[in-house]
Length: 105
Image (cartoon, rainbow, N blue to C red; front, side, top):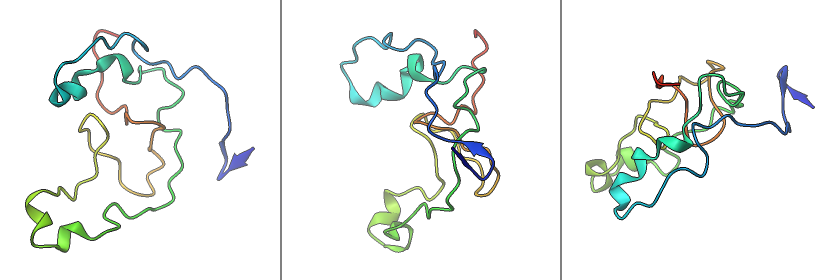
């Protein structure tokens, strides 16, 4: 099936760095160090997402005086990498935008 000339509903290997190799973390603040779940350079998930122009701040936290101190209006993925601009056609599928090149892969 295609939407906007993009194949959807595909069953492919996402080509993660080392799925299942994340180890055990004893501190939730270390979650972004789980590089085993990042996308490889050759992952078919890179730039394969659909852009529905969803608002990043649907609850308007950026306009709330209390929440402003705790809210970053710049959209990022799980690892803190910036998301591409809406309409760019560069959104990846999953928690990793895949924008950071992992030199060892």
